[in-house]
Length: 299
Image 1 (cartoon, rainbow, N blue to C red):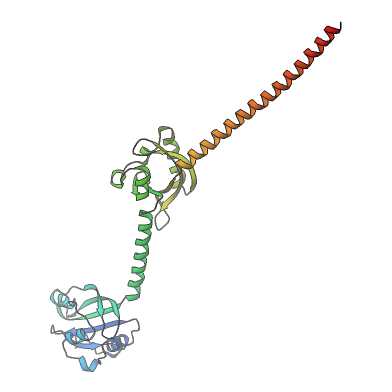
Image 2 (image 1 turned 180 degrees about the horizontal axis):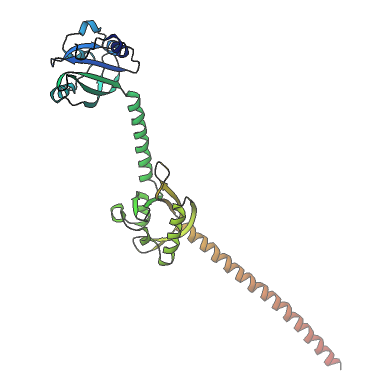
């Protein structure tokens, strides 16, 4: 034990007092014999250090439900550290996620005489990670299947995302639009305006409920209500734009019909007023003519 002096009480105390779920096993002489385990191993396995010292590490592996190939095999062979992640089914306990680090112990400078196994529980981190991943997957499905058209572009105005709502509204499949400049959707008279919008958005501005018109795959102009916001990296740096558009063609058509009806009504109102005024004028003219006729007869 002189090579590593694992029995040194200071080092042993540090290992045994570890309170973060760390498991440390030392295997020496290339025979995979346990030289020491700390309190975490004792709590999980129910075994005592003095019971397993000198025994094969397979005894410990079975007691803690480890069925994975131990990375120490490779470490003892070539002297290189190993890192591995796996799940343990602990008897009378729950499934827990572990990270396993195997570090070589050298005698002198070249000969590997054993290794230190450090196993740390990361169940909470994994659960948090899985929760975040699940939530992000949920958000992804919401965006992909939204009835609204959602389109993202990069800094050059090229399309990087095109959801199913955009496919329904504009008639283009996602694979046919990715990488294209979004200008192809806009009428010529709106292309420069769209570029000005992008410049403003990339500077941090958000444009809400802009009424505009875009071509669909049939070449028809579609009335839309468009909201555009900057798309940012986690550090806040702009990386493009995200636009959400709604089809308001029916609304705009109804508005135009209402406007036309109002104009027609006003036209008839003007005609009616003019007719009434003309009738009053005619009545006055007839009245004057009758008076003149009576005067002429009396004369």
